[in-house]
Length: 172
Image (cartoon, rainbow, N blue to C red; front, side):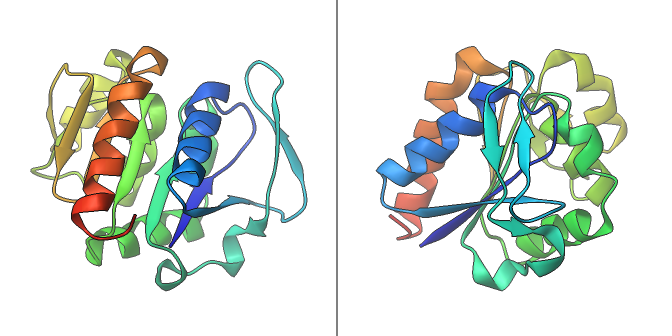
């Protein structure tokens, strides 16, 4: 099984690495995708991450799970048409999508939140609701294939819910 973690500058370090490491522990191969394969991107606190593949190389068919980190990276990620199409393709195929904190911006721009239950950092609650989502102030919210969470202190609940969804679908 394969997971894909989206990557851009100023990702929230824990929100990128905790899911990557947890899914690797669960037995998934996790690739990091950025605008440029081989490029080193840096988190808000300076932790580096190297892109294994570029956005242009990707298709949803190659992966079983999509992860979108928080931090300021989502504001950059949502500007790439390839990223938005990838999110739409994952959602159309009902493949799991994990998003935390500001990652909801990417899902908003992909226009997949209408009528969906989600959470995020409270700072983008209005954005999520204006995109048609039902926003809940909970550590983790699961709605079909979407697993959303608020911020770093919620990472244990977020990953427990994501791994449980993967187990239910026979992916781990």
